[in-house]
Image (cartoon, rainbow, N blue to C red; front, top):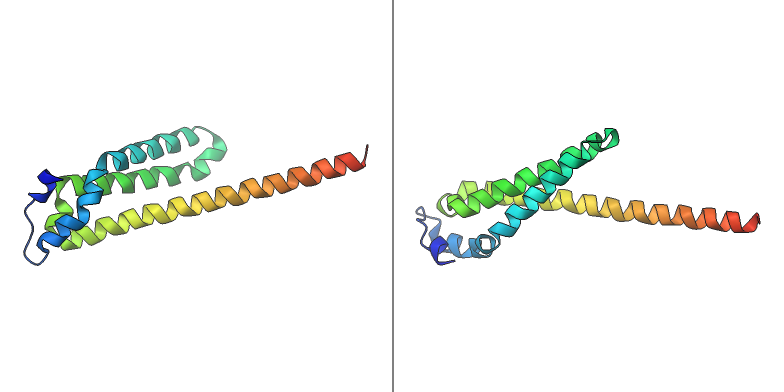
Length: 127
């Protein structure tokens, strides 16, 4: 945190911009890890025909997270309020898209479980 706190801050942004980004700076390595894991997962999904249809989504999320990590690490966001807003918008987009994917996954698993229960019930009645 100390090296980030020493970043030069443009007039008008004040030290609050640096302080507010401190938690993101501390987890920048984790953000970068999640970004690369997402990109690799997306590339692996694209190796199948069906995966090509949805494999671009995790790659996109990974790119957004990498941009966020780089902006935080380089201190770009602390120096430029406009870039800070852009970076946080990218992070928010990544979180929104990931949330949609998780909800979609839960819905698909529940639908699969319901179909399996119905099929098992029908199979049990026919024996």
